[in-house]
Each structure stands twice: as C-alpha cells, then as structure tokens.
Image (cartoon, rainbow, N blue to C red; front, side, top):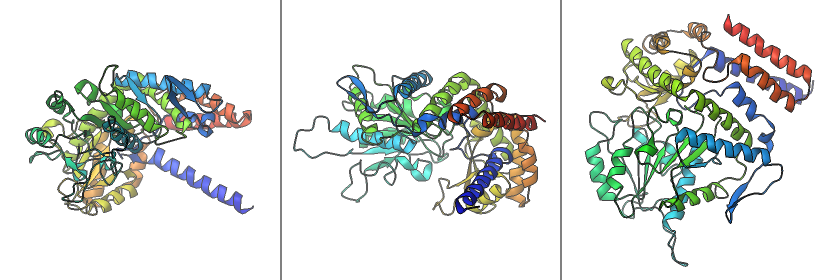
Length: 483
C-alpha cells in the first residue's frame, strides 16, 4: 500500500469517526452551528460546486461572464424569490460567502454611498461615526473595528481610535439597551450607520425605538441589523423591516437551515433616497468582495430556503419554547442562568449560564465536551477578559431540529449539572440519551428524501452498484435509528 492510499484510509476513518461522534453521540449546543438536511448536503456536492458564475448589472442587464451558467442563474433567481418571501423584503444579494463578508460588503457600500456627491479630486471620506453593540456585552466581532469594520470608519484624532460608540445598557440587565441613554446618545453623535445584532443574543434589539427617533433627520443613519444568529427566527423573534430597518445581513447556517454562506437583504423601494445604497451593495458584493461565490452551497441554500418557508412557523415556535424550557431546567438543577426569569430568560435560541462558582468557563466547556455535550465558553458582560470567561453559551436550534421538545431538555440539564457541579462523568449516559434524537425534522423525512439523494448522487457518480450501496447504507442507518 502506497503513502497516498494510507493517508486516504486514515483520513476517511477520521472523518467517519468524527461524523458518528457529532451526529449520533453528542448533544450539539453551540448556537452558531447547525446540521443541514440530507438534501441540502447533496446539493452542496452537485456539479455547481466546482463552477463559476460571475455576473453583474451593466446597462440595465444582468451579464454573466461564463458559459454553462443557465441552471445556476435559475437557482440564484429562485433563491432570491424564496428569500424575498421569507423576509418580506424587496432586495436580496446572495453572493457573500459568510456573514462577516456580508457585513464588510455593507461597510464598503456605505463608504461609497456617503461619497456619492464627491467632486473629482476631493478626498474620499470614511463613515464619520458608527453605533454598534459593545463586543464585551455581546456584540459580534465582525461589526467591530478589529473585525470587518476596520478601515471604513474615521479615526478620532484625540484618541487614535475609530469613531465607534456602543449601545448603552441598563444597570439591572446588561443584555438590554438603556433606551433613555440611547435617545440622548443618538442626538449627541448622529451616526452614519447603526448596527443592531449580537453574538450573545437573548433579547430583541431596539430597532423601532431608534427608527422613530431618526426618521425625520435630514441625513438619517442607515439602520442595519446583523441577524447572523437569529436569521432562522426572523418574524417570531423580530421582524426588522417592519420596525424600520433598511438592510439585514446574516449567516445562513446558524438558526437558518442552510449551508455556510452569507446573505444581504434589503427594503429599498424605487424612489427611496437609499436606493443608491443598494446598487452600491451589489457592486461591492461583486466585483468588490468576491468572484466565485461557491455555487454548490448556493444550490444548498435554495433547498434550505424551501425547507424554511415550509416549516418556518412550527420550527421557530419550538426553538423559542425549547430555549425557555432549557433555561428553566438549568435553573432548577442549580445552574445560574443569565437574563431575567420573568422574561423567560431568553427570546431567542440562546441560553447563557454563569459557571464562575464552579470554575473557569474554558475548563468547564472542555469538561462538557469530554462528556459529549458541545457548547462554547463565553465572556459575560462583567468579565474583565475573554481569557477568564464566566459563562457558557448554548443554543437549542440544532437539537430542536433533531426532534427535542421542551421536556427533553430536563435530562440534558441534569447531565450538565452533574458535569459542572459534581465533576461526574456522564459520557455514556449522554451517548445513550442522544439515540432518542437522531432523525432530522422540519425537512423531507428519510424515507422521502433518500430516493432524491440517490438520484443526485447517481448523476455525479454513474455507478449503480455504488448508488445501491448508498441507499442500503441509508436504510440501515434509518432502521437502527428507529429501533
């Protein structure tokens, strides 16, 4: 056996081992992850995954610069239409390949937009000031100067730092904005751009409150909502366009059912003074930020959006209900839960716990992982450094999709408490409990999906024996799941 064969076998076995561990033996509670359905995965490996489809609007026409793109053009147009339906919006830009890229496209477009009246020879100005959420209080990294905002906002000559101010939070609940202070701050600073959205995200953002304050300003700020974590909860959690937002960005693989991509959606009707901003967003998506926009995952996104539009309301209700049930169960077993109990602790898929009484968050996250409970450590608002986090951040979206209901989170909370409070090993018990939640919901079920998956696979690998083996393997897994 040569080195190539040995490495292929070794890697294959590691892949299989990791798949079994994450898909059949673990409770996946990281709030920024999810498992796509079988058909979404099959879309990702279909022929478009190796193709290009660069295009841009020129003289009122959409011009494609590669041949063989008719199918993917249809996919992109249909995905746009399905997402307009999901968001109830007018505009969709699909080419960002991550949520962070989607945010950077907006920041680039904002600089172009605010310079729209610049005369030749005049210097290009950056955004004068941006309002966002503090990184230490849950703000997303991509909306910070150290992230995608870098280079797009002016520097304060007095401090040498970018001119960014943060939403003020209440003294009693650092996860909620202080609206009185926020009103004063808006009048004082008059930002060019306001970025809503967080990565530590348990409550609604004050979009409507801000929109009403700024609506009559002569050059009001653009209102952007980074919904990366809550894109799949659009509507039941918050509907930013109905509240006055201009543009929404997000990742398509956290609470949304899709593969790992980004998306930008907007409400810029004809006649809007911000219509030019949308044209700048499109040009900054291509050619300004990306060339190949990963057509396999684009095809997967269309399939995932079919699923979201079909199962949206049922899935969303279950996610929020599960998160609140999980939070209550954790509190009942003696784990301190962040947020206000009277508000149900959370309005999203996320549950935040404080573990400083039991150890460092990094160590506890590792102990949970060793017991097949995968979550991530989190610095809470009063922590001095991310290196000594007090919290663990969890999300229920993936396990909701694998069929967990409210009462199912009580045993899971008990396992977590045993690991955190008592240092007990519960790995085998957790693995056994996970066997109850192996079949994915809110999509075509295995019996319906398998023939379609096999048909896609046979078109990629025209070997019927291989396809038959694939179908038999899927049926074997399904039979073992149902026992």
